Length: 381
Image (cartoon, rainbow, N blue to C red; front, side, top):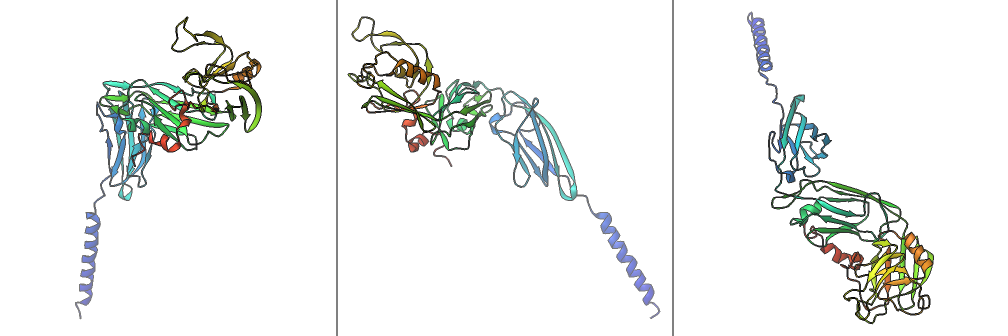
């Protein structure tokens, strides 16, 4: 019994020593490991893979990437362990990346790196875009993108094309160097649309990469839709659903295919005052040859069809005597000329010659299901 108190004290001292030794032996957790792809100091990185930054053993707290002075847009995944650039990278460009992450018990890590993307053997650019930037267009207007060369990987290029409009639409390839965007229904009137081609760095084919991005912003104007009935020889123009013009017209005489006005949904494409019109496939002196200057002409196809002025009032509203165009009284043709925007629908009925979807901007001739088949992404999930 005499030894109980000293023994208890000894046990207490030993227990305290064990705790103290455990505290001293505890190791600080390692910092998270931040990696980037392309790797730091890469000198010929493929631009089509984009930029990816990841954190092992922690969460990313910030990623800042720049191409020169231009920030690179991107987003974190749900766990904040990965950050990916929104689009591909510009070829032949130096990028600077700064990232930070935090791990267990608040242990932090940072990464700073730079790399350069490859210079492609061949570049692909955008030759033209319709509409042009800042244009006001009609409710049927397509977006037509023409590239500077042939596109082999259409799906990769199509994925880089963005339309910000809030309506349903789709791309349709009209050849190896042209792609067209059309909405399922006509654009809403007075609507703003932004088209952005994130083409820089997209691999369009072996050794071929997009060279630059392109952005076009345009506005859809009032809804002006015209209907042409070649049987009653009347053209009715409606704006926002209200009739604003009733125009007696004369359409194609239909003695030959070329002299037959095409039936279907046309779009106004351009206009001129005057426009020189020459008979197709005929030389001077041949029967039916003509070479005339026509005023207030609004083109609606690539096969020579216009809505234009002509002083043959005796035929307008009574007979079809033209070479395929729709002609109207000069004052009314002038009104149409002055009010027409590119992309205004002109719907022609009453003839046995159908407008081909490849004739001018006859894209509305394709049913929506068929239009969707022209997308390179149609069969991809």
